[in-house]
Image 1 (cartoon, rainbow, N blue to C red):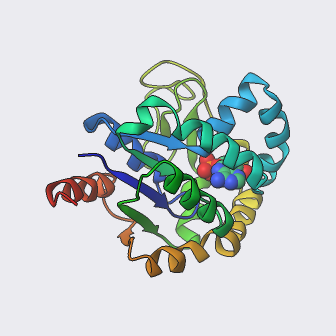
Image 2: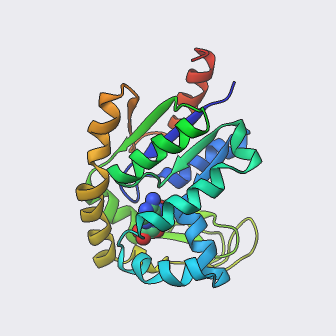
Length: 218
Ligand code: AMP
């Protein structure tokens, strides 16, 4: 069956890690607006050049740019077989736009998964997070270090700290999350789509939820 879900949670809740465990075992497409934007920054596109300063400051990129980007991405062929949205929608107006877009495409959402975690745990997790600049693999200097310092275990790429993973930027991203994104909890609760998962738990808890959705044939 085709499953369409949204992952919501503060930065550092493990959305990327959960999505990676899903990718290994499940054919569903993972669409991360943060990843698409970072690719644009690397490639130096007009979108990337505009987005860069907002991203480095932990601020949201303009809704109109994000909506146009997602409209294009969701129209690609692979998205027709279901998807996990990670990092989008990020505020109520993006959620309204997504509703319109899905209506136009005659598609419906199956669930919205909220990864719950405290701000203190987020700060600790993100200041110790490192990512591979080549393949995007995620590491943690405390809980999941690379075998050789600064070198990716899977592709030997350079492992770095994201510019927005420094503490002052993380605090900023958290306050943006509480102000802009947290209202989506009530938004999707009202639509009976919200499912809460403790983000301190298993890295494959979202995969398990996805499989239970499919088993129930929803
Ligand atoms: P993420 O990897 O999801 O934490 O996203 C990194 C940064 O990209 C965010 O701090 C924002 O600057 C930008 N970004 C990602 N998704 C969105 C979105 N849906 N709306 C606006 N900005 C976004």
